[in-house]
Length: 216
Image (cartoon, rainbow, N blue to C red; front, side, top):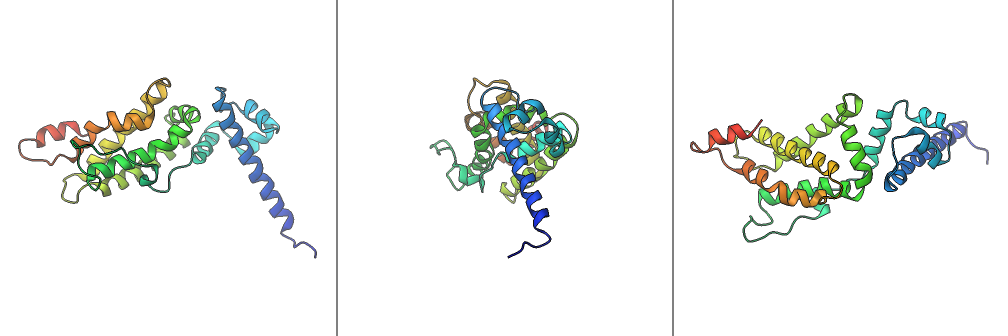
C-alpha cells in the first residue's frame, strides 16, 4: 500500500519531536551529573546532535528553559503526591489547613524529584523575559486554585492566597541556594506552617490590623 501525501510531513514532525525530546533528556542528564544543563553545545553533544540543530528547536536559551520547565512532571492532583501526616496539634485531614499542605506538597514533590535541574531553572525563571512571563501566568493559576481551597467565608481570599503562594516561592529560592539543606517538601511541611495558619486566621476586630500588615 502506498503512503499518502501527508506521510513525509508526518515523518518530519516525528523526527523533530524526537530530537526535541532528546535535547530535553540530555539537559536532565547533564544536570544530574552537575554539569550546566543550559549550555547549548553541551546539551547538543550529550544528545548526539549538532549545535545548530539545538538552535533550530530553541531559538533562545529562555525558550529552552521554558521547555525544561514543561518537562518536569507534576502530580495529577495535589493529593497524588501525599500529604504530611496530621498531628494532634494540627487540624484533621479534611480541614482547609490540610488541603493547603497537600497542595504545596504536590507542587514541591516533582521539584525534589528533579532537584538538580529545578535548582537551575527556578532562578532562571526570575530573569525578565518570556520565561518570567510564563512563570507569572503559572503563579496566577496557582493563586486561583489556592483561593478556592480557602474557606468560603474568609475575607480577602485571593489576597491571602497570593501571600501564601509568594511565601512558597520564597521557600523555592532558599531551597535552590542551599542544595545541602532540607528537601523542598520538608521545607513546606516545616517552614510554611506558620504562613498557612496565619492565612486561615479570621479577620476579627482585634486581629484584623495585624492580618492586614502581614498580607501584601
